[in-house]
Image (tube, rainbow, N blue to C red):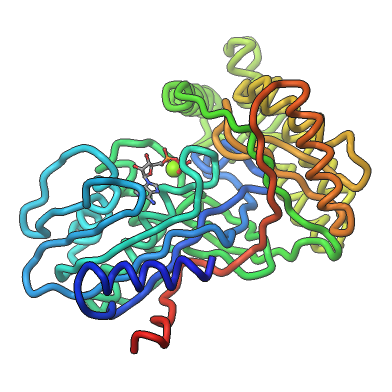
Amino acid sequence: MADLRVSVTEAFRHRFGAPPAHVVRAPGRVNLIGEHTDYNDGFVMPLAIEQAVWLAVGPRDDDRVVLHSTRAPEPADFRLGAMERGDGWGEYAKGVAWALQAQGHELRGLEGVLASDVPEGAGLSSSAALELAVARALSEGAGLDWDPAVMARTAQRAENEWVGVRCGVMDQMASACGVAGHAVLLDCRSLAVTPTPLPAWTTVLVLDTGTRRGLVDSAYNARRETCERVARVLSVPALRDATLDGLQAAEDVLTPTQVRRARHVVTENARVLAAAEAMRQGDAARVGALMAASHASLRDDYEVSSPALNAFVEAAQAQPGCYGARMTGAGFGGCVVALVASDRAEAVAEAATLAYRQRTGHAPTAYRVRAVGGASLEPVPALFL
Ligand code: ADP
Ligand code: MG
């Protein structure tokens, strides 16, 4: 939100006694379709959303990076010339600095204040938003060129190799390469970005189940390993290259679980491409049907949904004006994404929330999201110039 731009600027001035040199913004994202396909070199269709990390920064004379987050009591505080592993949220910032330096970039120290309205662990990628905000600020401070896809890879490397989370590249690509008013079809192998307009008169709703699951990391790694194993059996570089025929031919040498996991990935990639085509034709009903099929596949074949996610999806899809809904993000909790008729958005959100609350007893929230551009340098509020 624009008010975070002002509040981080004020917080910066309060803390450091001068206005910031730069304000950067890096958005969270919601994935419309294409789940658990990114680490299989496949296709995804996220949109960058207004909810974002905002970071006000200024240069320092030494090689320290000191960042304060409104969400954490301790700042991220480290020296660019002496990077050591630690724990806590600062590792995301440190990881980005480490990855940039590992690519040979010379960075400069900086200090700043950040605030975010991307909920954590909800499947909207608060971590990628944080990484891209830090990357944008460090790049600006050091006068580096900003190539969004390259920076997305750098941020992914930070999360993989410094933080130790084996995420795919979708979150970072979405935060770096978002396009206002569009979802982006991403090829997670080539990193090609194809802006894809949302069908006219449709709105994207995020329905937060109010549940979060710790299970996600171990299950995520297990799914990844299964995918890699099946790809080896099929003699393809990644499941993106597998076909349903190929999978069927190998059924004797795979377990039924491996077949179902791989079937999700193969069919999900096809659904993403079909959804992109339907969006180009403005066919909201078709996009919604593909989202519903995606959810069924994640629930039954990939087994990463949860009773709460299933209940909210069902509650949304029962509403007139809802084209389709599915779990979004890694799963086991977090959010549902729904494509709805714009003139029914409020009614769908209200009725689905009520039905879900009555059925589960959880405390849901629902909001519409707007597709915005990727990580950017923003004007410092004029008040402080
Ligand atoms: P998500 O799905 O939201 O990306 P992750 O577990 O990948 O969930 O990342 C969440 C982590 O990112 C938090 O535990 C915290 O370390 C870090 N983080 C995200 N936003 C902020 C913030 N505004 N301030 C400090 N740390 C943050
Ligand atoms: Mg994350």
